[in-house]
Amino acid sequence: MGEVRKLQKKLRQIENLEIKISLTPEEEFKISRKEELRRRLAELQLQLCGPQRTLGIQADGEESEMKRHVEDAPEALPSQTPPASKILRGEDAKCKCEDGPALLATQRTTGGVVKTAQRQERTHTATVSHHDRRDMSEDCPDRGDDDDGGRRQGQEDAEFTSLKTSWQKAKFRLRLLEGHNDIITCVVAVDNLVVSGSRDTTVKVWHVPTATEHKNLGGHTGGVTCLSAPPPEYCKKLAWSLSLADTERFILSGSADCNVKIWALSIGQCVKSLYTFNAVTALCFVPEGDGYIITGSDGGKVQAWSWHTLDNCQSINAHQEAVTSIQSQGPLVFSSSAEGGVSVWENRCSDRDPLSLLHRWSGQVTGCGGGRLTLSPRGDKVLLAYGQAWIKILHWRTGTVSRLTNHSSVTGVTDCVHQTAGLLIGSCYDLANGESMLNLFSVPQCRYLASLTWQRAPRILCFAAWTTGSGDHRWVTGGRDLVVWEQLPSSGRRRGDITVRTDSRLESPLESEGDTENDEETDDEHLDDDEDGRRGGRETDVEDGGSGSWLRCVLQ
Image (cartoon, rainbow, N blue to C red; front, side, top):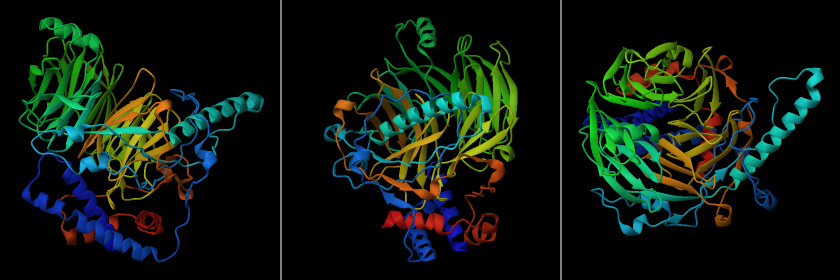
């Protein structure tokens, strides 16, 4: 048991090292041992599980299930919030298309040169796993409202069933965008363009319809950590002042070189630059008043900059450690930090000190300390991804916390969470075997829909999404690889090599934080073997049949 805990912790430390903005030779050596540690962990877990047969995993081979009619999915379901199901961990399908994006991912070229043959579109079917569960009502309605409540619940269930059926049949065309020579840390979508930032110090602009590199924006001297796209009406104001066309679009990029650069996409040039005196780790644009750029630094500082004058309006020592994510929702600004704290600010649209603190919740409240914390706000809730097997849900007005399981194994981690068009999308990565997927939930109820993956899918560290005029989804994911996901229309869908599986062990609702054990771990990157063993007692004994039996299913 102790060695299993130690190996799990070491793998988590290595994965955290891999996404750092720079590495020392000692850290690079630790990363080189990842495959060795994975093999040893798999051996130990198989020994602990014994030879018994895994229960609860079954393939869904019903032909009628795959041929159900797909209704048009609603953008968002009604506002009641029934419990959410836990995530099903799907097993990769054996793909018949051997030259799909996974193969392209292993044939990356150097020096940012994209081979024409590798840029060609490859139609590939994402593996879809789903988990059917009976819905559980959250509260019993009053006796006089039984009939109305029952009808509403029935309508919601019918809509959810239609949406779930649609995602069970979803097909995507995946296209690899090659050009970066290091980890992609951030992505954003603008019209038919995708903009990506990388640890290789470059910002690249990609033309989605042709999957080709459109612009290479070089100018940062440190790794690019964050991107943001101001709305068109705010771009128009800056374009007018620079004598550019009214249709000009701008991109903001933050970097470890302490600069925020403003790029004009049509000409591919930096038109403005802000020096922040600290490495920029997060930023967002707030479209309120004349507009504001909000930045976060590696020292925990949050700063506000006027979009109109580009002057610094405010500097706040907001967090004890590095700011990891900043997002806006109307006049509200949400910031998170490496120690697990979350702060909520109100933008008062003033020339001086526009940000006013509304709430601050520490890592002790959120339970998210010691990880790479990213956030996605929606109404009174903030969804938090922090390098564990769960998505935390913080009710930011009250400080109450619940969690949604995003992986069936304790060795799973959640790197990013995103909301778009009635969907909650969480990335999921298994430290033990290197498998990656996207888990889909309906919002606002957070009810599980499906899991999407493909063979040898890389770890997903960043995500952007938009919809086409026909309502189909287009996504872009970044990490080791930059991949565009294009949902195929109904006329383009074809029966693919899909394995659909269910896991009865995941039939649990959304958990409140008070009903669960402490799930935090100490992720000290510099612990040696002896220190790992001494500190392993802090973790709960979770390496039993739960995670091990799942691993055995994957290996079989």
